[in-house]
Amino acid sequence: MRITGLALVPPPTAADLPKVTPELLASVLARYSRSNQGIAAILSKVDLANPDASIDRILSFVDYGHASIGGLTGGLAVALDDVSMWLAYKLFEIATMADGQESSTRYITMDAANLPTAAELGIPDDLAPRWSALMAQSFAAYHAEYARLDALATANPGLVRLPPDAKPAVVTRLRKNYALDRARYFIPFATRTNVGLVQSSRMWAVTVKHLDSLPHPEARTAAKLIRDELLKISPRLMRHSVAEKSFVTQAAQELAASCSLGLERLSAAPLADEVWVNVDRATPPWLRETQPVSEALCHRANRYGHQGTATRRMRVSFAWNNLALAELRDLNRHRTGHRYTPLIQAGFYLPPEISHTTPAHAALLAEQRELTRELMQRGSPAYVYSLLLGAQTPFEHSTHGDKFIYEAELRTGMGAHFRYAEHLSAALREFLKHVPEARAHVVEGTAEPE
Image 1: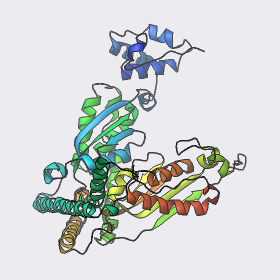
Image 2: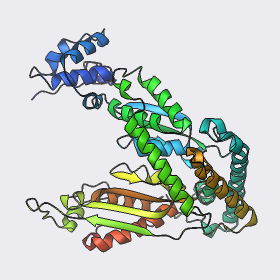
Image 3: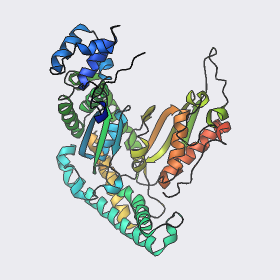
Image 4: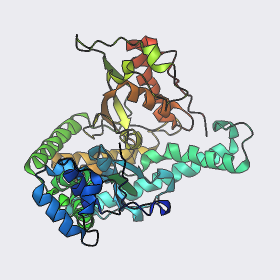
Protein backbone atom coordinates (compact mmCIF):
# COMPACT_ATOMS: atom_id res chain seq x y z
CA MET A 1 0.00 0.00 0.00
CA ARG A 2 1.23 3.48 -0.91
CA ILE A 3 -0.22 6.82 0.11
CA THR A 4 0.34 10.01 -1.84
CA GLY A 5 -0.99 13.28 -0.49
CA LEU A 6 -2.79 15.76 -2.73
CA ALA A 7 -3.15 19.24 -1.31
CA LEU A 8 -4.87 22.36 -2.57
CA VAL A 9 -2.77 24.46 -0.22
CA PRO A 10 0.01 22.33 1.26
CA PRO A 11 1.23 23.16 4.77
CA PRO A 12 4.81 24.50 5.07
CA THR A 13 6.11 21.10 6.17
CA ALA A 14 4.65 19.37 3.11
CA ALA A 15 6.53 21.10 0.31
CA ASP A 16 6.93 17.80 -1.49
CA LEU A 17 3.18 17.42 -2.07
CA PRO A 18 1.96 18.39 -5.55
CA LYS A 19 -0.12 21.57 -5.58
CA VAL A 20 -3.30 21.22 -7.61
CA THR A 21 -6.29 23.40 -8.41
CA PRO A 22 -9.74 22.07 -7.42
CA GLU A 23 -10.57 21.06 -11.00
CA LEU A 24 -7.16 19.47 -11.57
CA LEU A 25 -7.64 17.49 -8.37
CA ALA A 26 -11.03 16.30 -9.62
CA SER A 27 -9.74 15.37 -13.06
CA VAL A 28 -6.71 13.52 -11.69
CA LEU A 29 -8.91 11.48 -9.35
CA ALA A 30 -11.32 10.81 -12.22
CA ARG A 31 -8.44 9.40 -14.26
CA TYR A 32 -7.24 7.53 -11.17
CA SER A 33 -10.60 5.72 -10.94
CA ARG A 34 -10.14 4.44 -14.50
CA SER A 35 -6.55 3.30 -14.29
CA ASN A 36 -4.41 0.77 -12.48
CA GLN A 37 -1.23 2.85 -12.88
CA GLY A 38 -1.33 4.47 -9.45
CA ILE A 39 -1.56 8.14 -8.60
CA ALA A 40 2.15 8.88 -8.99
CA ALA A 41 2.14 7.73 -12.62
CA ILE A 42 -0.90 9.87 -13.40
CA LEU A 43 0.61 12.94 -11.69
CA SER A 44 3.83 12.49 -13.65
CA LYS A 45 1.89 13.26 -16.83
CA VAL A 46 0.38 16.45 -15.42
CA ASP A 47 1.90 19.78 -16.35
CA LEU A 48 1.44 21.82 -13.18
CA ALA A 49 2.59 24.91 -15.05
CA ASN A 50 -0.34 24.52 -17.46
CA PRO A 51 -3.11 22.85 -15.43
CA ASP A 52 -5.93 23.77 -17.84
CA ALA A 53 -4.36 21.79 -20.66
CA SER A 54 -3.87 18.82 -18.34
CA ILE A 55 -7.48 19.00 -17.21
CA ASP A 56 -8.80 19.13 -20.77
CA ARG A 57 -6.58 16.24 -21.82
CA ILE A 58 -7.72 14.05 -18.92
CA LEU A 59 -11.39 14.92 -19.19
CA SER A 60 -11.44 14.34 -22.94
CA PHE A 61 -10.23 10.80 -22.20
CA VAL A 62 -12.35 10.07 -19.13
CA ASP A 63 -16.11 9.77 -19.53
CA TYR A 64 -17.64 10.92 -16.26
CA GLY A 65 -20.78 12.38 -14.74
CA HIS A 66 -20.08 15.95 -13.72
CA ALA A 67 -21.77 15.42 -10.32
CA SER A 68 -19.50 12.55 -9.32
CA ILE A 69 -16.39 14.49 -10.32
CA GLY A 70 -17.60 17.77 -8.80
CA GLY A 71 -17.59 16.09 -5.43
CA LEU A 72 -13.83 15.56 -5.72
CA THR A 73 -12.94 19.25 -5.78
CA GLY A 74 -12.42 19.53 -2.06
CA GLY A 75 -13.84 22.26 0.13
CA LEU A 76 -14.52 25.52 -1.72
CA ALA A 77 -15.26 28.32 0.74
CA VAL A 78 -17.63 31.18 -0.04
CA ALA A 79 -18.58 33.98 2.35
CA LEU A 80 -21.61 36.16 1.67
CA ASP A 81 -21.73 39.47 3.51
CA ASP A 82 -24.90 41.47 4.13
CA VAL A 83 -27.50 38.90 3.12
CA SER A 84 -30.89 38.74 4.83
CA MET A 85 -31.47 36.28 7.64
CA TRP A 86 -33.97 34.62 5.32
CA LEU A 87 -31.33 33.97 2.67
CA ALA A 88 -28.90 32.63 5.28
CA TYR A 89 -31.62 30.25 6.51
CA LYS A 90 -32.36 29.19 2.92
CA LEU A 91 -28.71 28.49 2.18
CA PHE A 92 -28.45 26.14 5.15
CA GLU A 93 -31.70 24.45 4.09
CA ILE A 94 -30.44 23.92 0.53
CA ALA A 95 -26.77 23.14 1.21
CA THR A 96 -27.33 20.00 3.26
CA MET A 97 -23.73 18.81 2.84
CA ALA A 98 -22.01 22.09 3.68
CA ASP A 99 -20.08 23.16 6.72
CA GLY A 100 -20.90 26.73 7.59
CA GLN A 101 -21.36 29.55 10.03
CA GLU A 102 -23.68 32.54 10.29
CA SER A 103 -23.08 35.70 12.29
CA SER A 104 -24.67 35.43 15.71
CA THR A 105 -27.62 37.68 16.44
CA ARG A 106 -25.57 39.00 19.35
CA TYR A 107 -23.03 40.60 17.00
CA ILE A 108 -24.98 42.12 14.12
CA THR A 109 -26.33 45.66 13.83
CA MET A 110 -29.90 46.02 15.04
CA ASP A 111 -31.06 49.00 13.06
CA ALA A 112 -33.28 49.73 10.06
CA ALA A 113 -30.12 50.82 8.23
CA ASN A 114 -29.04 47.18 8.37
CA LEU A 115 -31.74 46.02 5.96
CA PRO A 116 -31.62 45.43 2.22
CA THR A 117 -33.76 47.87 0.27
CA ALA A 118 -37.35 47.02 -0.55
CA ALA A 119 -36.38 46.82 -4.24
CA GLU A 120 -33.57 44.34 -3.53
CA LEU A 121 -36.06 42.09 -1.74
CA GLY A 122 -38.83 42.37 -4.33
CA ILE A 123 -41.28 44.14 -2.02
CA PRO A 124 -44.10 45.47 -4.28
CA ASP A 125 -43.64 49.20 -4.90
CA ASP A 126 -47.00 50.17 -3.41
CA LEU A 127 -46.22 48.28 -0.19
CA ALA A 128 -42.60 49.42 0.17
CA PRO A 129 -43.35 52.48 2.42
CA ARG A 130 -45.54 50.34 4.66
CA TRP A 131 -42.86 47.64 4.89
CA SER A 132 -40.14 50.18 5.72
CA ALA A 133 -42.28 51.71 8.46
CA LEU A 134 -42.99 48.26 9.93
CA MET A 135 -39.30 47.40 9.97
CA ALA A 136 -38.46 50.64 11.82
CA GLN A 137 -41.21 49.95 14.37
CA SER A 138 -39.92 46.41 14.88
CA PHE A 139 -36.39 47.57 15.62
CA ALA A 140 -37.79 50.23 17.97
CA ALA A 141 -39.70 47.52 19.86
CA TYR A 142 -36.57 45.41 20.06
CA HIS A 143 -34.47 48.24 21.49
CA ALA A 144 -37.17 49.27 23.95
CA GLU A 145 -37.55 45.73 25.31
CA TYR A 146 -33.81 45.16 25.38
CA ALA A 147 -33.29 48.31 27.47
CA ARG A 148 -36.18 47.44 29.80
CA LEU A 149 -35.03 43.86 30.36
CA ASP A 150 -31.39 44.89 30.83
CA ALA A 151 -32.44 47.42 33.48
CA LEU A 152 -34.73 44.85 35.11
CA ALA A 153 -31.94 42.27 35.30
CA THR A 154 -29.53 44.87 36.69
CA ALA A 155 -31.97 45.72 39.46
CA ASN A 156 -32.82 42.07 40.12
CA PRO A 157 -29.64 39.98 39.77
CA GLY A 158 -31.51 36.80 40.62
CA LEU A 159 -33.31 36.91 37.25
CA VAL A 160 -30.19 35.79 35.42
CA ARG A 161 -28.72 32.36 36.06
CA LEU A 162 -25.01 32.74 36.75
CA PRO A 163 -22.14 30.27 37.13
CA PRO A 164 -20.70 30.01 40.63
CA ASP A 165 -18.20 32.81 41.42
CA ALA A 166 -18.94 34.60 38.14
CA LYS A 167 -16.66 37.56 37.52
CA PRO A 168 -18.17 41.03 36.87
CA ALA A 169 -17.47 40.81 33.12
CA VAL A 170 -19.29 37.47 32.94
CA VAL A 171 -22.22 38.85 34.93
CA THR A 172 -22.51 41.77 32.50
CA ARG A 173 -22.32 39.52 29.43
CA LEU A 174 -24.95 37.10 30.69
CA ARG A 175 -27.24 39.93 31.75
CA LYS A 176 -27.08 41.45 28.29
CA ASN A 177 -27.60 38.03 26.70
CA TYR A 178 -30.66 37.59 28.92
CA ALA A 179 -32.11 40.82 27.55
CA LEU A 180 -31.18 40.13 23.92
CA ASP A 181 -32.42 36.53 23.95
CA ARG A 182 -35.87 37.72 25.00
CA ALA A 183 -36.12 40.93 22.96
CA ARG A 184 -34.87 39.29 19.75
CA TYR A 185 -38.32 38.08 18.70
CA PHE A 186 -39.02 41.59 17.37
CA ILE A 187 -36.03 41.46 14.99
CA PRO A 188 -37.04 41.39 11.28
CA PHE A 189 -36.23 38.25 9.30
CA ALA A 190 -34.96 40.65 6.61
CA THR A 191 -32.12 41.89 8.84
CA ARG A 192 -28.70 41.65 7.23
CA THR A 193 -26.30 39.02 8.48
CA ASN A 194 -23.21 37.23 7.13
CA VAL A 195 -22.87 33.56 6.21
CA GLY A 196 -19.98 31.38 5.08
CA LEU A 197 -20.18 27.86 3.64
CA VAL A 198 -17.60 25.27 2.61
CA GLN A 199 -18.57 22.49 0.20
CA SER A 200 -17.46 20.78 -2.98
CA SER A 201 -18.04 22.10 -6.49
CA ARG A 202 -20.70 19.43 -6.95
CA MET A 203 -22.73 20.72 -4.02
CA TRP A 204 -22.10 24.36 -4.93
CA ALA A 205 -23.50 23.72 -8.40
CA VAL A 206 -26.69 22.28 -6.88
CA THR A 207 -26.92 25.10 -4.35
CA VAL A 208 -26.51 27.82 -6.98
CA LYS A 209 -28.95 26.08 -9.34
CA HIS A 210 -31.50 26.00 -6.52
CA LEU A 211 -30.95 29.66 -5.62
CA ASP A 212 -31.23 30.68 -9.25
CA SER A 213 -34.57 28.84 -9.50
CA LEU A 214 -36.21 30.64 -6.57
CA PRO A 215 -38.62 33.53 -7.20
CA HIS A 216 -36.80 35.84 -4.75
CA PRO A 217 -34.59 38.50 -6.42
CA GLU A 218 -32.14 38.29 -3.51
CA ALA A 219 -31.64 34.56 -4.09
CA ARG A 220 -31.01 35.01 -7.82
CA THR A 221 -28.57 37.85 -7.13
CA ALA A 222 -26.69 35.61 -4.70
CA ALA A 223 -26.66 32.79 -7.27
CA LYS A 224 -24.97 35.02 -9.83
CA LEU A 225 -22.40 36.33 -7.34
CA ILE A 226 -21.50 32.83 -6.15
CA ARG A 227 -21.37 31.45 -9.68
CA ASP A 228 -19.13 34.28 -10.92
CA GLU A 229 -16.75 33.72 -8.02
CA LEU A 230 -16.57 29.94 -8.35
CA LEU A 231 -16.15 30.09 -12.13
CA LYS A 232 -12.68 31.46 -11.38
CA ILE A 233 -11.83 28.28 -9.46
CA SER A 234 -13.99 25.57 -11.00
CA PRO A 235 -15.18 26.86 -14.38
CA ARG A 236 -16.05 23.56 -16.03
CA LEU A 237 -18.04 22.20 -13.13
CA MET A 238 -19.92 25.40 -12.28
CA ARG A 239 -21.37 25.61 -15.79
CA HIS A 240 -24.11 23.30 -14.52
CA SER A 241 -25.39 25.81 -11.96
CA VAL A 242 -28.19 27.68 -13.75
CA ALA A 243 -31.93 27.59 -13.04
CA GLU A 244 -33.58 24.35 -14.12
CA LYS A 245 -37.23 23.42 -14.70
CA SER A 246 -37.68 20.89 -11.91
CA PHE A 247 -36.24 23.33 -9.35
CA VAL A 248 -38.35 26.24 -10.64
CA THR A 249 -41.53 24.16 -10.65
CA GLN A 250 -41.05 22.82 -7.14
CA ALA A 251 -40.21 26.29 -5.81
CA ALA A 252 -43.41 27.68 -7.33
CA GLN A 253 -45.49 24.88 -5.87
CA GLU A 254 -43.94 25.32 -2.43
CA LEU A 255 -44.61 29.08 -2.52
CA ALA A 256 -48.25 28.48 -3.44
CA ALA A 257 -48.64 25.90 -0.66
CA SER A 258 -47.02 28.24 1.87
CA CYS A 259 -49.27 31.15 0.93
CA SER A 260 -52.39 28.97 1.12
CA LEU A 261 -51.49 27.45 4.50
CA GLY A 262 -50.15 30.76 5.75
CA LEU A 263 -53.39 32.60 5.05
CA GLU A 264 -55.36 29.82 6.72
CA ARG A 265 -53.29 29.90 9.91
CA LEU A 266 -52.03 33.50 10.03
CA SER A 267 -52.12 34.81 13.59
CA ALA A 268 -50.29 37.20 15.89
CA ALA A 269 -51.48 35.34 19.01
CA PRO A 270 -49.06 32.90 20.68
CA LEU A 271 -49.35 29.27 19.64
CA ALA A 272 -49.37 26.62 22.38
CA ASP A 273 -46.57 24.05 22.32
CA GLU A 274 -47.14 20.77 20.50
CA VAL A 275 -44.48 18.24 19.57
CA TRP A 276 -44.60 15.08 17.45
CA VAL A 277 -42.01 12.29 17.34
CA ASN A 278 -42.06 9.14 15.24
CA VAL A 279 -39.51 6.33 15.64
CA ASP A 280 -39.09 3.56 13.07
CA ARG A 281 -36.95 0.64 14.27
CA ALA A 282 -37.87 -1.78 11.49
CA THR A 283 -35.08 -3.84 9.92
CA PRO A 284 -35.08 -6.38 7.09
CA PRO A 285 -35.72 -9.97 8.26
CA TRP A 286 -32.31 -11.12 7.02
CA LEU A 287 -30.45 -8.35 8.88
CA ARG A 288 -32.18 -7.85 12.19
CA GLU A 289 -30.78 -5.46 14.78
CA THR A 290 -29.51 -7.42 17.78
CA GLN A 291 -27.65 -4.75 19.73
CA PRO A 292 -29.51 -3.40 22.79
CA VAL A 293 -30.02 0.37 22.78
CA SER A 294 -28.25 0.58 26.12
CA GLU A 295 -25.15 -1.01 24.58
CA ALA A 296 -25.26 1.48 21.71
CA LEU A 297 -25.12 4.39 24.15
CA CYS A 298 -23.38 3.35 27.36
CA HIS A 299 -19.76 3.67 26.16
CA ARG A 300 -19.93 7.40 25.31
CA ALA A 301 -18.04 9.86 27.48
CA ASN A 302 -20.12 12.75 26.05
CA ARG A 303 -22.40 13.56 23.12
CA TYR A 304 -19.48 13.32 20.67
CA GLY A 305 -18.90 9.65 21.46
CA HIS A 306 -19.65 7.00 18.84
CA GLN A 307 -23.02 5.27 19.08
CA GLY A 308 -23.80 1.71 18.10
CA THR A 309 -25.95 0.32 15.31
CA ALA A 310 -29.08 0.18 17.48
CA THR A 311 -29.42 3.98 17.33
CA ARG A 312 -27.59 4.59 14.04
CA ARG A 313 -30.13 2.40 12.17
CA MET A 314 -33.14 3.89 13.96
CA ARG A 315 -35.13 6.42 11.87
CA VAL A 316 -36.47 9.36 13.84
CA SER A 317 -38.78 12.15 12.65
CA PHE A 318 -39.66 14.98 14.99
CA ALA A 319 -41.64 18.16 14.54
CA TRP A 320 -43.00 21.16 16.36
CA ASN A 321 -46.11 23.13 15.46
CA ASN A 322 -44.67 26.41 16.70
CA LEU A 323 -40.95 26.88 16.14
CA ALA A 324 -40.19 30.60 16.18
CA LEU A 325 -37.91 31.78 13.38
CA ALA A 326 -35.38 32.79 16.05
CA GLU A 327 -34.98 29.09 16.88
CA LEU A 328 -35.49 27.89 13.31
CA ARG A 329 -32.34 29.72 12.22
CA ASP A 330 -30.20 27.47 14.43
CA LEU A 331 -32.11 24.18 14.47
CA ASN A 332 -32.23 24.32 10.66
CA ARG A 333 -28.41 24.00 10.62
CA HIS A 334 -28.41 20.43 11.92
CA ARG A 335 -27.49 19.01 8.55
CA THR A 336 -28.31 15.32 8.58
CA GLY A 337 -31.55 14.10 7.08
CA HIS A 338 -34.30 16.29 5.68
CA ARG A 339 -35.75 19.47 7.17
CA TYR A 340 -39.03 21.00 6.10
CA THR A 341 -41.07 24.07 7.00
CA PRO A 342 -43.74 25.95 5.04
CA LEU A 343 -42.24 29.09 6.65
CA ILE A 344 -45.51 30.66 7.72
CA GLN A 345 -46.76 32.59 10.74
CA ALA A 346 -49.19 30.31 12.55
CA GLY A 347 -48.67 32.28 15.77
CA PHE A 348 -46.24 34.72 17.33
CA TYR A 349 -43.99 33.83 20.26
CA LEU A 350 -42.94 36.24 22.95
CA PRO A 351 -41.29 35.02 26.16
CA PRO A 352 -43.16 35.35 29.46
CA GLU A 353 -41.23 38.53 30.28
CA ILE A 354 -42.85 40.37 27.34
CA SER A 355 -46.59 40.89 26.92
CA HIS A 356 -48.49 40.58 23.65
CA THR A 357 -51.13 42.94 25.01
CA THR A 358 -48.96 46.00 25.57
CA PRO A 359 -50.69 48.57 23.28
CA ALA A 360 -47.54 49.31 21.28
CA HIS A 361 -46.76 45.60 20.83
CA ALA A 362 -50.35 44.73 19.95
CA ALA A 363 -50.46 47.47 17.30
CA LEU A 364 -47.11 46.41 15.85
CA LEU A 365 -48.10 42.74 15.62
CA ALA A 366 -51.47 43.60 14.10
CA GLU A 367 -49.80 45.65 11.35
CA GLN A 368 -47.17 42.98 10.78
CA ARG A 369 -49.87 40.32 10.45
CA GLU A 370 -51.90 42.39 7.99
CA LEU A 371 -48.90 43.22 5.81
CA THR A 372 -48.00 39.53 5.73
CA ARG A 373 -51.60 38.75 4.78
CA GLU A 374 -51.52 41.26 1.91
CA LEU A 375 -48.28 39.82 0.53
CA MET A 376 -49.55 36.25 0.80
CA GLN A 377 -52.83 37.13 -0.89
CA ARG A 378 -50.79 38.45 -3.82
CA GLY A 379 -48.73 35.24 -3.85
CA SER A 380 -45.61 37.35 -3.35
CA PRO A 381 -42.45 35.49 -2.34
CA ALA A 382 -41.50 38.69 -0.48
CA TYR A 383 -43.89 37.78 2.33
CA VAL A 384 -40.92 36.16 4.09
CA TYR A 385 -39.43 39.62 4.61
CA SER A 386 -42.46 40.85 6.56
CA LEU A 387 -41.89 38.14 9.19
CA LEU A 388 -40.20 38.83 12.51
CA LEU A 389 -38.15 36.30 14.45
CA GLY A 390 -41.10 35.64 16.77
CA ALA A 391 -43.21 34.23 13.92
CA GLN A 392 -44.04 30.61 14.75
CA THR A 393 -43.96 28.06 11.95
CA PRO A 394 -44.30 24.26 11.81
CA PHE A 395 -40.91 22.56 11.41
CA GLU A 396 -40.11 18.91 10.73
CA HIS A 397 -36.76 17.13 10.79
CA SER A 398 -36.23 13.54 9.68
CA THR A 399 -32.94 11.88 10.62
CA HIS A 400 -31.54 8.90 12.57
CA GLY A 401 -31.55 8.11 16.25
CA ASP A 402 -27.89 8.89 16.92
CA LYS A 403 -28.24 12.33 15.29
CA PHE A 404 -31.43 13.12 17.21
CA ILE A 405 -29.79 12.17 20.52
CA TYR A 406 -26.80 14.39 19.72
CA GLU A 407 -29.08 17.34 18.92
CA ALA A 408 -31.19 16.82 22.07
CA GLU A 409 -28.10 16.72 24.29
CA LEU A 410 -26.53 19.72 22.55
CA ARG A 411 -29.62 21.95 22.58
CA THR A 412 -30.41 21.30 26.24
CA GLY A 413 -26.79 21.43 27.39
CA MET A 414 -24.47 24.11 28.68
CA GLY A 415 -25.12 27.55 27.22
CA ALA A 416 -28.22 26.47 25.25
CA HIS A 417 -30.84 29.14 24.61
CA PHE A 418 -33.80 28.70 26.98
CA ARG A 419 -36.30 28.19 24.14
CA TYR A 420 -34.13 25.60 22.37
CA ALA A 421 -34.01 23.69 25.62
CA GLU A 422 -37.80 23.78 25.99
CA HIS A 423 -38.35 22.49 22.44
CA LEU A 424 -35.74 19.74 22.58
CA SER A 425 -36.71 18.64 26.08
CA ALA A 426 -40.29 18.16 24.86
CA ALA A 427 -39.10 16.18 21.82
CA LEU A 428 -36.77 14.09 23.99
CA ARG A 429 -39.61 13.18 26.35
CA GLU A 430 -41.63 11.90 23.39
CA PHE A 431 -38.62 10.03 22.00
CA LEU A 432 -38.07 8.26 25.34
CA LYS A 433 -41.68 7.04 25.28
CA HIS A 434 -40.77 5.21 22.06
CA VAL A 435 -37.30 4.17 23.23
CA PRO A 436 -37.40 3.89 27.04
CA GLU A 437 -34.16 1.86 27.06
CA ALA A 438 -32.27 5.07 26.17
CA ARG A 439 -33.43 6.97 29.25
CA ALA A 440 -30.48 6.05 31.46
CA HIS A 441 -27.92 6.99 28.81
CA VAL A 442 -29.19 10.21 27.23
CA VAL A 443 -28.11 13.31 29.12
CA GLU A 444 -30.78 15.99 29.11
CA GLY A 445 -29.14 19.24 30.14
CA THR A 446 -30.52 22.19 32.07
CA ALA A 447 -29.22 24.90 29.70
CA GLU A 448 -26.95 26.12 32.47
CA PRO A 449 -24.94 29.26 31.61
CA GLU A 450 -21.48 28.93 30.13
